[in-house]
Length: 153
Image (cartoon, rainbow, N blue to C red):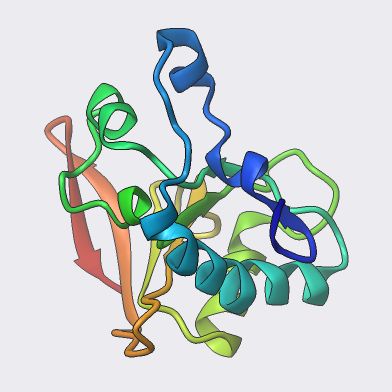
């Protein structure tokens, strides 16, 4: 089953950590509309624009999976509203190109330049609010004394 033309539910819920730890990472019916809105408004427009597969490192995260990886208890991943994309070493755009296209061309709730350096993030986090009101919040994640912190773009 697909959430959009090029994003399957299996790809959106795939997690090596969940597999390794035997955790159920199925997408609950309550989050299907959120996941579909994210796929149709963020993933598919990116896929269509760049004309190449996009590599999702994290899509939906069940509560158990989110806890296992140390994710925030407010994570939009756990509501089917966020994806992390990492194009490093793959054919197509690099992470900075993905980030900049989203920033300049797509409606989003939150966009995060995840770590990396001033020229390219290590990966891109993007979320979409299914209720239609997007904050357009742009952040940069960085480490400070081993702790993840965020600053505004």
